[in-house]
Length: 181
Image (cartoon, rainbow, N blue to C red):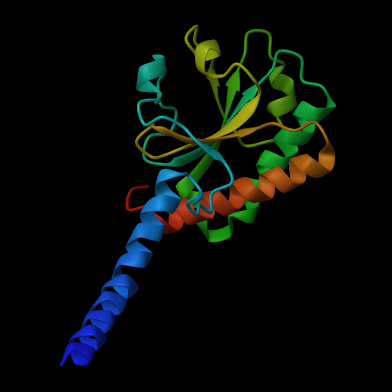
């Protein structure tokens, strides 16, 4: 009788261990930050409080997704390449183009003549903007005017192309999942 009790006890402990060990292992992985959650976005997510309204700016195209680019006062070759890639990314959206609008924020002294060849909406930068856009970047804006993701600008032409592809992939996912705009 004692051998069957011991055998039953071993089976019970083994069964409890089978269920408890994965829970303990998962807790250990999470508490030691060994698990890196999967994310497919390439851009950096922005705080949900950041929007046109919080920056005292008018939304130039409410109801549409926007690819926002801040044009520097002195638009050199990297800037011109970025404008071209912004246009190419917009064209690459295909049938989704009617849901998206490229927008360029003009800094004081920006040369607007460079934008004549593009079909971009332009807006003027406000005094609050440098607090949030300290570096050149592209920002994805949702139809409600909230700034969603940002992409730091690259100077190398190959890196710029790769970044535009990453932004385009993220934007396509957002458009697919979006119920507004």
